Image (cartoon, rainbow, N blue to C red; front, side):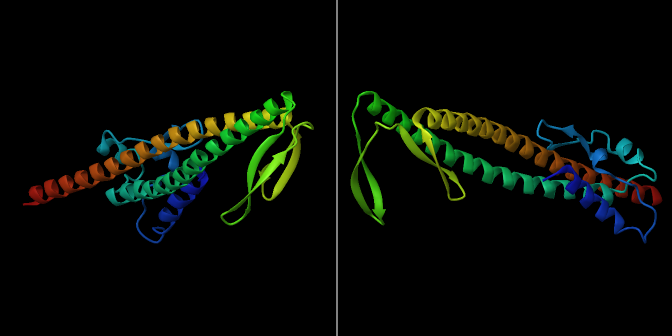
Length: 212
């Protein structure tokens, strides 16, 4: 999810008020404090709501502030879902890569020993057959995804798989960090929405007391 998509959503919300009284123009940059390394926005915490509301011309209404942060909150929930799915995929793929690396190293060892490898392969559902693998040629075929299989020497296969393992682990580290970061932004949005709502309630009560 890109920052431009969040910006366009806020702009759409503002456009719905075009036929009403003039309202403050709240952009994405007004409610975030930059981004993290992978361009996920950091929610701006509203410390002084009066000052923040008055920084717009005309001053931003509670409804507009709540609407802007609610929209941002919704986008963060989408990012959270995407990151959760990506993390699950990485957690599943890393053990498979490690298993492939272990297998290639086993084949390399058998080649060095001048021996063949005995294995069982899936012939059909719940049916396995025993096979003897000739390791003398030092060739292995790797699935690369999208129904693509390529032939590699043991050394090339080990180099490729090791690089994939390293990248997958780094991706998992990054997505775990991003997921934690995103959840913190969701909490900040919720706190801001609650604080703006309570601020509005206090203002209305003060106004009602003053008129009486």
